[in-house]
Length: 279
Image (tube, rainbow, N blue to C red; front, side):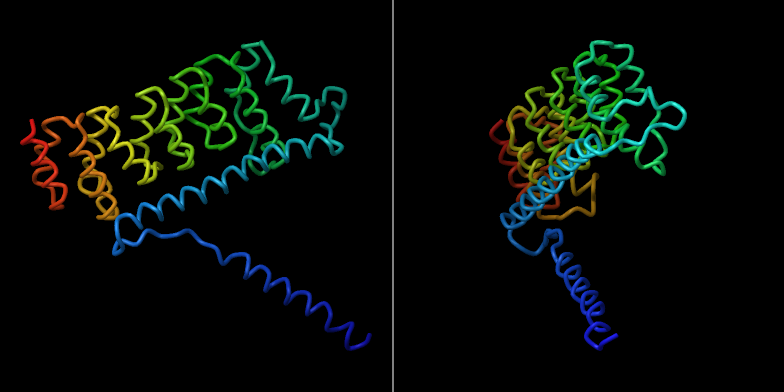
């Protein structure tokens, strides 16, 4: 073997290593507490946009994998080949089915073990079809919204016509921040309030909720505790911005305002005293 032939594979490995190193340079933008408040909110918004793009890509990959699996020769269950149904056929059948009993059974069916990757991926893809079918009983859609961690399923349920389903999605601890952020703008006040209380909600959405005069007094009281009783290790700048917005919100209840007059942030305390004087 020539010297050129011997060194070529090594060069290829080194090039691949450099490509991998370049590919992992991008990272999440941390919110710096010592910069201006506007810069912090911009950084938080940029982080939300990046997460949104990544998660939308994940959802697109789920659909792409569904189509790809259907176009490839599917492995048939051993000993029962005649009953096998391709993934796209099953998806479309469940998506348009009016058999509420079948849909309910599928919604409650235990998922395959993750070790069986093919079966697990197939089941989660089909749950998306069940979640998006209005013939699936409401109680089963609520169950999926409360228990499922899969973005493709939760996205379907987040636009469900039944507000109780959207409320369940808003309270799901596995929500992506962009999804729960979308629900802070929901037309239903309870959906908005539940989403604002979700730990996955971004500071940008919390600030907008604290500024919204349609936010309930109970949720404003919750937001007024951020950085103090709740999430004490949170960014002082961001948490105080939210508390100040609560103090200035006309829906803020008297007890909440009185508590904020003693806030550790001078800006928050000043805003609360000003609002009390206006009343």
